[in-house]
Length: 375
Length: 122
Image (cartoon, rainbow over all chains, first blue to last red; front, top):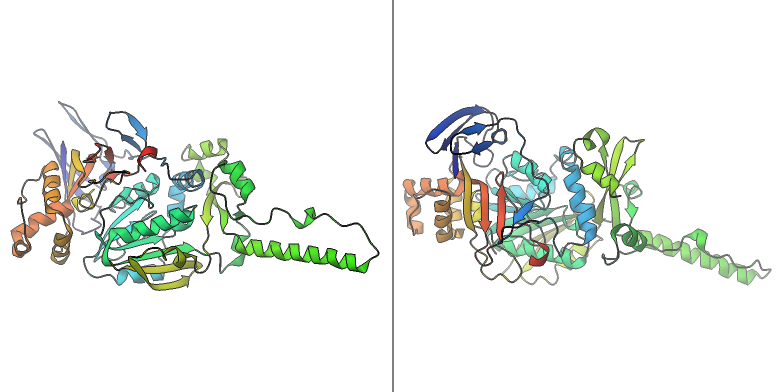
């Protein structure tokens, strides 16, 4: 076993400049000043200790060793539909550094929730992304998890306490946390059962009296122009892009106005009126369906200069999971979203009999809910 | 991965009844000194499964914790310092967490545990 000692001075985020690392390996001690822990790489054999600075640690597709010693990928989980694997997990792994660079502003309501927690609270962040909320309240201890190893690596490089895990299947003991948050995560889950299970898991892992904050994207976007940039999913998309057997989404009317067969021209005014009524009712139905639409692909434009950093974009383009937009100079990834309608988030909690809703609100085009565990 | 995290981690493989505590096989341990917060430690003491905590700290090469502990010991500065050190300053940088029931091995790489399950484990 290698045993290293790192001296720093912060509870959650140790200072990273001018730290001193002492490495004791079988009697030999190396002392080295360094700027950040990730720059140190130790290789040990019976005779020597090699310190290789500036070698970036890399977490790619996570592998785990099963009991019989064979190495298998743990990225695919049986309960995860293909649409999530391809259009959520794969995408966030590919865009992680660029995505992270755009994720720094803290939502005031989330900040207020975290700031209200008692001194010494243990806070669990499920779907923590780049960790922007981890450590927001210096008086609390945060543990974050996300299904994207690339995003978790970013958190770890920032000295956050994190692990790779699935929000639908949290690897935590029951009742351990004082509070939990899930910010902009549930809308990436493609079935109602999975969304409900994620909420149940958040409630399960907090103690009695513990609070859970959940936020999701809303159908009711304050900037209505935004939705026009999204691709509505219908059965055609799901079958062709994702494959049969995936969860079918709520589809807009499959017939467009242009495809409505015209009636034969008639001198009968009555017949013409019926024809106009048919057009009008189809049009209204179309409008209604657009309003009811909740399944979307939301584009992420990864600039070419960033896309070239890794081979992930080339693979995604080859596999048809991303497209090129030469005008914008970007590789375009589609992220799957189920946007929530008013009351939908609350309705998911009705079968959870060990928690009550203590607050619910609409904030920055998000539906938000705060639950308190009662048993 | 700190031992505070280890003490709340459990193997959630389908059918597993006793997924806690995960056994630590340590390959590389790092110590990072952080400020002590007495109130936080007292609060955490109530949550911690002490036996699992002691076993984990020993697996990480730290043997200064008593086999058993009760809340009266929190008045001792020496005990608090040891508790703080084991809970928050020891980091498993490289190693494996092993499910006590199935033997399934969850890797810890660059300080990050990967707790994702295989298709047949959900």
